[in-house]
Image: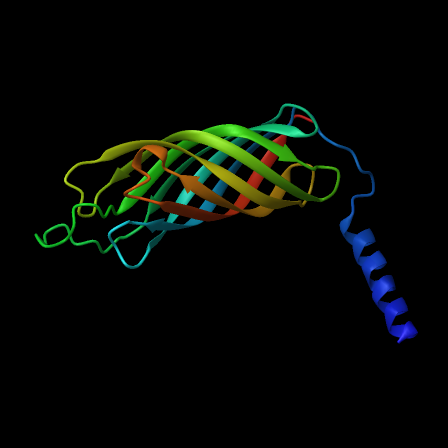
Length: 189
């Protein structure tokens, strides 16, 4: 049993050494721009199942300090490509697309190759298509949780998830979630 513990500890130390940068240093005033394919899940209040679809985001981040980043993103998601608009019996509350533009602040730990972060963003949402009679605008925000891996000083890959709250349309759309894979280019160290 003791030998197994030694092997596990050795594996963890070697693994940590392989993933850790040779020099740990936080980065300030760094710019990030990225492209993020996304999975989107919209809960409509009068629908028994969630509307699920795919989308695409672009994001821009700027390192205000070594701990805080300005974060912004634009996303367009097809949440229900097969919503039938022609059927008169369908409720007029089921969109086919949701787009949003958000900006906010994130807390980041960027002294390792693995970069965890959490952010709070606010902005606007555009809900359209499907069985809606007209497009709708909503104000809201999101909490974002993510993890990036820095391949080099200029490139990173990662994943993030956002839980959105459409404040002005909360009774109709109580939950909206996006999960994203991220590819980003960085400059300005």
